[in-house]
Image 1 (tube, one colour):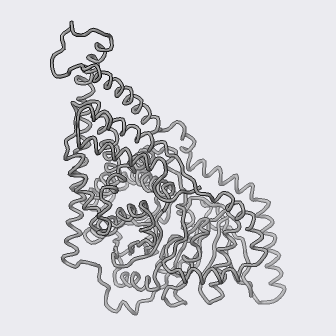
Image 2: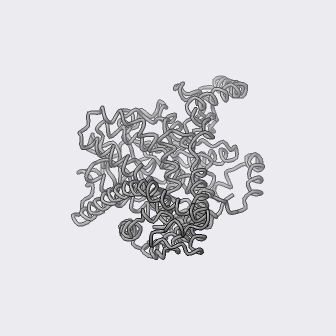
Length: 638
């Protein structure tokens, strides 16, 4: 019989989630069939009548859970802070230029009789205040940031040494004996939300996984709120189901908890208890057919293993300058950070996709929680505290996309840097009172959270974007050349080692990382103090680039045949509106522009002191902020 859409209420009342899925109608008789159809019709009508009530419930729940969002206007505004510094710097520059033009010699003691104007007296008073009060405070702050910079650089260097050791010794996870005959029950989950550009290739890749069909189930977890997209995804699922693939389409009418709520709702299904492992893929990920055969066998005869994480590879890493610079960062993240932590510590942050979890480990760790925007890191930390071990497979790669526009990348980075600070506040008491060793506690608190998630964006923004330009106006607190040149270039070279083809981009990479520090610092502060913007969740925009063009074209042709005319008419109005506004344009990013003006102002001031290296750094860093602030990097979006 053809599949019929049925609406049921999930057993978990905390989610307030109605779920739509595809089921099969029983063939016990026409009476039973008509009864079930009538019941389904009544449920649908009740759902329509009750939808305002459910919408009110979900709004109240979201307001209760994210109550701090209402305080957004009262929270930290980094732009206001930057404007104040910029205005003071600009006024000081004008004053310094006037003093230089008047040839007020600062190299000797000024006698009282030599002071002839009020401006001259005010300038001398400024010099006194600057030397006695402002400079000492700035010196102490700069020294503090330099210490943090050196500590973080040492950590980065030690990680690179660990990666070099792994390469030299050939260390990597080894499959257990007779792993080729190990075929446990595996559940594949593909959470998505309005993923019109990539749903075909992700579903197609999952359905082509090489695994016994009777031991594999694919869940397409659709949180889309655009009706036409829901229809497209549902029809794609039905097309694969007709080919004999064990695949289920699930849609929540009430989307709560974002991705964590979606996964939590899916794991509450009764049939999940029949499966031992769950593989997760975001909507733009395309695993190779042998992905499960390369990952799942590692669980054999290893009951303490909770997670096997694969590496990401990017189909659009050479698309533009923005994707090239992202590739440098992520290549270092996988090749060095995750591989070293996986080999020596059996722990790293779960990436949220391209990984396989033991379902027992998920349940033992408390399951998916909706308390932060980094549910993947949350479950990894809780599993680590429960004693579960992780394996990272650097040789197993899953294709995906990098954000091609600065807007999409900026929003992604904001979530990636605010979420860990939310999680740190929530997990700190649990980490301290847990039964894990003192070394593991120190690794979690100091290295995993503080050094790599808090200290890095703090010193990067404070030292290179605030202190350095201020030292041009307060020369008593001048930063040494090795702080602004030698060490940063050396660390950038270390970051580029996993992506050797990116060596020509070492200077743009250094400038861009400092440029992104304003976004990361703002996100870190928002997450640490639980400000309104820390709970923002925007789905990263995809372009739908595929690593296999023929596969994508074939999927499109088959899909066009399967969609009925009524479905096209239903989604036509939405698609027509999308085409009208689908014009690329540049955006303006005020934080970046404010910092560009500050740095260029400081560069102009450095000319008065003939500081060569400082001038060139401030000039190129200011131009980097200007390019990003005018949205001249990456693709432009609506």
